[in-house]
Image 1 (cartoon, rainbow, N blue to C red):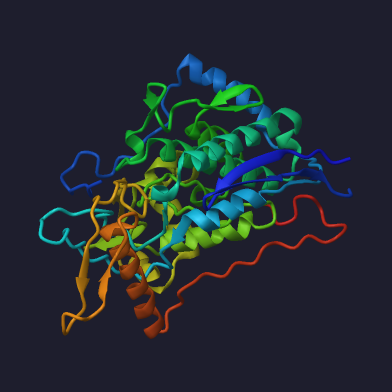
Image 2 (cartoon, rainbow, N blue to C red):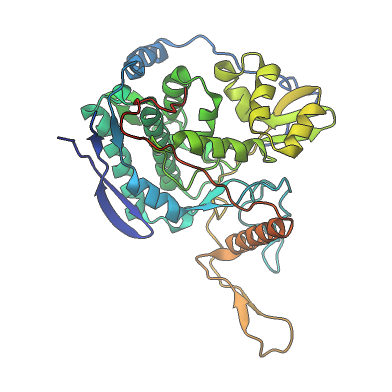
Length: 406
């Protein structure tokens, strides 16, 4: 009989609960050319004794060669994502215009990044204490799954979906607790940086967000497209998807995420004869791009659309110099001004008043307006304004690792 794991999560202002069953089925600023770190790629340095101990313990999550056919249901996480994440649409390789200052002042509110019309934004402003507590409960329930189910014995795609979802749930939970905050990397958990703090416990082992990425997933998955599943909470990183990852959709959804990132300004740009790429690629180079320029060019070419394909052919070297650490938040990591602005439309004074609510704020209102304008312009240029992906279909008799991400 299949075991069921109760996972509770609040979304859109209401607490909800449903089983997530592990069910057994039959069978910052761009660097300058003169900077010393211009071509620096971090190496894997000498580990501390504590880190080696954690790594040794995490070997228990090495995927098995003979998986059992189990699945984990993330329906509640999927529901929450669709209510708190706003996609900005496919990249159009156009920088966002400078945001307007607050009426009558020089103060600028909300997201300032020129990449703010790419990726996705989280609506942290609307997450109250009850919702945030439900994220904590959900993360803890995912942790408890590892106590009763051998994750390493699942099909590879099921394992990968679990680790990505756990990472993203935990990160969103911690940012929501600290919001308002301008940059997620400024958050400290128990006196340690957010990415390094071991506040997650799997199979009794305390691990960090970095441990999940590097010591579990990057360690055992060879395909570099897995890097696009891990949300970093920043505008400059891969977007937080509006779909929960599952064993069925993880491969296709990672392809969609890779396509978005590679063809975005936050991912690739041409600067003279140099191809500027996101610093993310240098971060993961020890795992996926040991021969950095050759390996990365081959990877980018796999997902490049016409503008990026042309850049690859017209550049002679690569610099990992694109970085944007601003929070991927609809309100830019700050509360809106506590006043309500309204004005009359053009014409007579009896025109209806227009404006936005105090809770929404001017910055978020204008970001949504810019998003609508971007999508309308893309539609007029006959550019796609959405992405389509197809989940893998499993049929009776298919092997458990069919279409597995290697």
